[in-house]
Image (cartoon, rainbow, N blue to C red):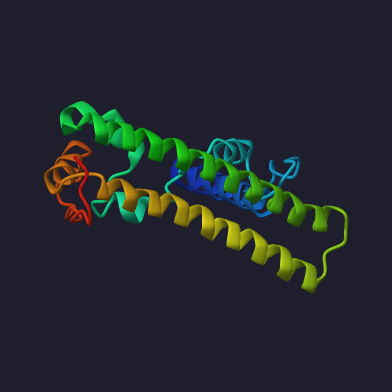
Length: 186
C-alpha cells in the first residue's frame, strides 16, 4: 500500500513541533533574564534617573486624573489658563521646591534600594534585615508619592475654579470632575 503525504497532516505536525519548541524555550527564559547585571536589581537605569531627577512617574495620577492640577503642566499651560503674574510666580516657586524635595526623596529611595539589594548580593539577608530594609524602602516610596500628591493640592489652591476646570479640559480630562480650590490667589 502506498502512503501519501497529506499537506494538512504535515502542517499539523510542524505546528506541534514549533509549539513544543516554543514552550521549552518559554520555560527556561524569564522576564528577568537581562536584569541580573543591574547595579540595583529592582530598579532600571531609567528608574534610577527618574528618581534622581524628581520625575513623577505616575505617582500623582489620583490627583491629576481627579481634577487636581500639577505645577509642571500648569506652567506649560499658563497662557491658555490665564495665570496672573502672581499665580505664575507662585507656581514656579512651588515647582522648584517640589522638585528639590522629590529629588532628595528619590535619592534616598535609590540608596535604600541599593542597601536592600546589597543584603542579597553579599549574602547577608535574613528575615530581620529584609523586614527592616523593605520597611525603609516602603516608607520612602510613600513619602515620595505623598510629596507628588500634596503638590497637586497646593497647586489647585493657587487656581480659581474656572482655571481648574480649564486645566482639565486642556489636558483632555473633560470627564474629570474638577476639584474645588480650597483657597484662591490672584
